Length: 410
Image (tube, rainbow, N blue to C red; front, side):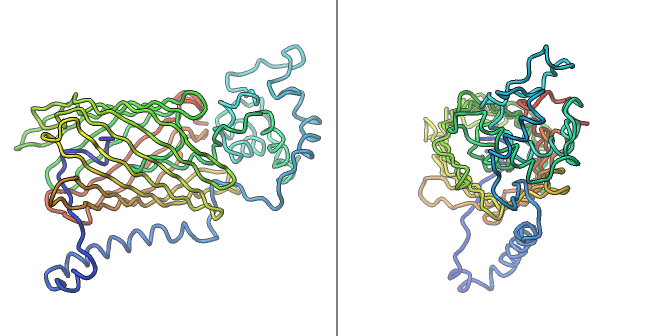
């Protein structure tokens, strides 16, 4: 999509020379190669700590496989009074409080599968207020061992009987540009701002809504502002309408694959060059992989196919993100996700060059419920830098399925 981080009017990019060409032309390109090397060294410096075995992760570690049979005994001895024998909640006549809006129905696969075991465990260990939930959920961290809590969670997972729903562990941190495969209920406000060259920025307001087990609709509304000939001009960009579908998801292998098809309507302001000038179709595939080491990779491959190629050429794009989520308090605290993205695109016409960018970034959860997140990074052109500016890219993300924006902060 033509959202923040890939605005269509910030210039074209070029293909990097090969190693052999660099050897032949090293006198002319030495300074340029040195700059590229520095960029890659920064990326390695960001990722190296995230790949060590000392780091904590968003995925729980188990000293032994959780036992749902043992968890059933614990659930029936302590949890059944409030949550009921079926996981839907106890009868109102048998409990002494009014059920809050956030009270879970564990048989609702659409509500529970999106949550991770980590989120469940945080609430059981520290009580509801730890995640900005009701105080009627007490803390059991001093009453149960870590292994016992894992057993209870394993039993509670059985209340959702349809195992085809993609699990929340496959919902990897959202990168700034690379789209992930997991279907979402989110609002994202994403901005790319020039930090070199002519001042300019693009802000995308993105609404994503999941429907059914594997589907998502998306609407992306870009708003552009640019200093053109020493005058600031603003206007609407091309609005994107898209549908995503999960084709494969497997928690055991840590893999998820989705296909998405989008249409960019030529709604942008043509006077200021904020539009492609023609309807553009944008299909892509997104594949995410979570490894046992808790490192994750995200890949995206797609194309922009305009209806009128005499106005805008067809192009291909491919993107990749690598990172790891870190957390304190035995992996139950605030989530920090350092990532690096490698971004490329190329027009499908004679003589076109491939553009490469690199984008190191950091995402962090800023609400107690962890349904509001902030991501910040710097996108740097690595090749064909003429006319292409370095950008500060950031977003604010609200997972509205987990509650209202002003809820869950303490």
